[in-house]
Image (tube, rainbow, N blue to C red; front, side, top):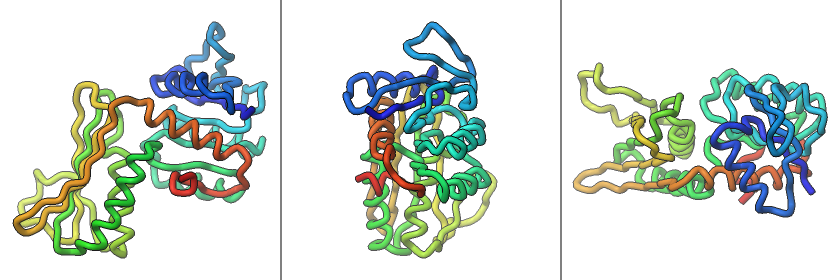
Length: 249
C-alpha cells in the first residue's frame, strides 16, 4: 500500500484528492499538510512538512507555490517522491524543481488531466503542419477565485507549440496598449475569470478563410485529482528524475 501525504489537504482540490484515494485499494492517506492545521479530521493535519511523524512514499501537493521550499527540503531530506500539482510557479521556482529532481523523483506538470495532455500533443502536431501560415491564439477560462493568470496550462500549451516550432514565437498577453498589426511571430494568450468555470482551454489556428480550434473543457475538479493520484502511484518506486504526464501514459 502506497503511503500518501496530501499538501493543501483542506483546500478544494485536496479534499477531492482525499475522496479519490478513498475509492482505491493501492494507496492510502497517512497525513495531511495545511496552513490551517486541524486535529478533528480523517487524518492528522500538520502545518509544515517538517512536522510530519508519518513518512510517506509520495507527497501530492495542491496547495500554493509558497509551499515549494518546505516541500523540497523535506523530500530531499527524507528521500520521498513529490507530485507537484500547484500552478503559478515562478521561473526561479521551476529552476529549483529541475535542480532537485537530480536527487529525488518529482512529477511536475501544469495540468494533471489526461485530456489536456492529449490536447497538448495535438497542438504540437497542428503547429508543425500549419507552420507560420496560421495565427495562433490561446484562450483560457477559469472560475473567479483563481489567482494566477494566464493559467499554467495555457503557458504549457504555448510552450509546447513554441518548442515544436523551434521557439520562433513570442507571447503577447494584452493587446489594448498595442496599436499595430498582429505580428506573425506571436502567440496571443488571453484569460477569462468568471463564475465557477472549472477550466476551459481553446487553441485557435486562424488562417486565410478558415479557422481550426482545438478545445478542452473540464466539467469537475475530479479529473485533476484522478490524474494526481495516478501520478502518485506511478511515482512511488521511481528513481530520481523529473517526470511528467508523458512518462506516465
